[in-house]
Length: 113
Image (cartoon, rainbow, N blue to C red):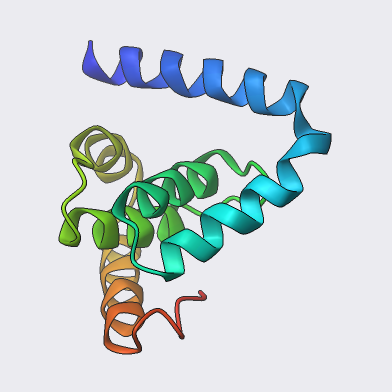
């Protein structure tokens, strides 16, 4: 049931974002900058964008990494984690955790996949 609700919410978000795709570039850049500045909500939003592939190349690993970082900084990322952990292999989760660690240790300077 939780998975169905989460997928429904993601589809709504995806339809909304797709309908306004031309307006997304400045917003994406702002979210990325805020995430790299340590803003937990922007980090969660960036994780959601990587999950959906909206304005960025879709990547569950990068999505999980940003969700993990947002959780570290105080965001409630449980819904995103529940979904990703059901879709990802343990190997991919390990890669995402390593990416999160590298990003945090570099003070958000080395957060790419």
